[in-house]
Each structure stands twice: as C-alpha cells, then as structure tokens.
View 1 (spheres, rainbow, N blue to C red):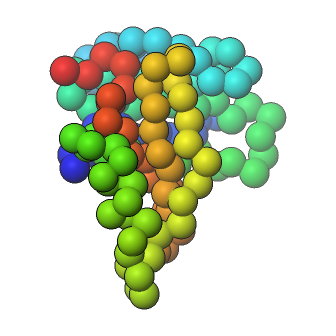
View 2: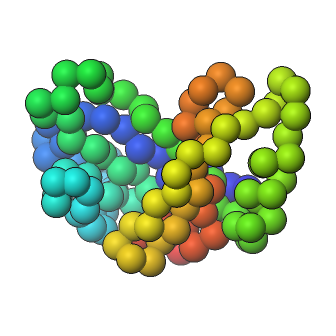
Length: 126
C-alpha cells in the first residue's frame, strides 16, 4: 500500500486550492462532489489532495478528513482489512465511485480515523 490521497475540509475551498496551485505548484485535475464543484482535486502527479468545501456545514471544521492508499488488488486488501481482530480491528464504511471510474473502499482505523483503499487510484496520478 502507498499513500496517494489526502482529503481535507475547507471553509473556502476555492481560496485554498489557489494557494496549493499558485504557491506550492500542485495542478487542479478535476472538480466534483455534492453539490457539484464542492470538491477540488489537486495533484503533484503522485499524491492527490481533495479539498472539500464546508460553507454552511458548521459541524465540519477545516482540517484533514481522511487519507487514501493505493493497492495492487482491491479485493485482497479489503479481505485483509476485514480479517483484523482485537486492537487492530477496522470498521468498513460505504464505498464510493468517483466520476464513474475511481472506486474506493472506506474503512475506519482502530482510532476511528477514515482511510480509503483504491486499486485504480485518483485522477491525475501516475
């Protein structure tokens, strides 16, 4: 598994995307989310940053929401994660199809932090 995706909440996702593209040199690869355009996807070619707008969502403070791992075999990774027991047990969450092609499975680690697992990766990655 390799980290390939970090998602964060932002109270002004357009402004934050400008910072990461203009100041740090990331490239915008797509927009999506609900409502449409609420999530801006940026990349450095290897790791994606998804900036999720939170205007009007008072319960979502700005900050990291989840991380994503790319795997060689999604079904094998899901089975391995499901098989953990005791203090390494993870909770499976509903998965997600992005733009009709990028599938990810979602889990919560033993501390409750969400992480994605994807075989196909995210837009703009090598």
